[in-house]
Length: 238
Image (cartoon, rainbow, N blue to C red; front, side):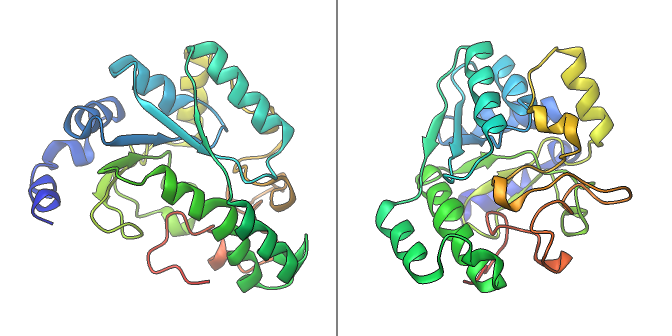
C-alpha cells in the first residue's frame, strides 16, 4: 500500500482536473501497467488516450451476448484508430457449468442467478484483463445513476485493492460527451440513436423510456439498487 498511499497524496489537482490532464497524469505515472477498458458505446476515452500515448493498452470483454451494433462499433474503432483491441472471453468450463445449472435465461429468475452470470461472463474475464496492472481507466460518469453520483476521478479501486481506478470524465454530462463525439467526428454505437444510453448484453439492455436515467435500461426487471454487474462494486457477492 505504500505505493498507492504516495499516489493518493499526489492526486492534488489531478483528482479534480480536466479529463485530458487526469488521463495524461495516469498514463505517465502508471505506464506500462495501466489499461483502458472499453465498452463500445463510443471511443471518447480511446481517442483521448491515443493523443497522449499511441501505444495505450485497450481491453474489452466479450460476454458472448453483445449486440451486433457493439461488435460493429468495436470494428469501427479499430479501423479508425488503427489499433488492435485485446478481447477477453468467459472461460468455457465456467460458462458450461453456469448454463447447466441455471439455463440460458436463468439470470432473469433471481438476482443471485444474474450475478452469477455477470461474474462468469464479465467480472472473471475483466479480472484476467487487469491482472498485473497497477491502474485502469473507465468511462464512469456521475450522471449515469444514483450509485455513481459520488464517483471520483482518481481513487483506489474498492473492488480490486491495490489497483488505482481512473474515471477522467466523471464530471461530464451526456451532452458534453455527445459534443465531443461530434467535434471529433468519432464513431459510436448506433444503438445510441435508438434510445439506448447504457449498453451491455443484448438480453439485458433495452432502450430508455421518458424520464428514465441512463442505467434504467439495464436489468429493468430488478430493483434499481441492483443495477451494477459487479465490475465496479466492492465485496460483490454471488
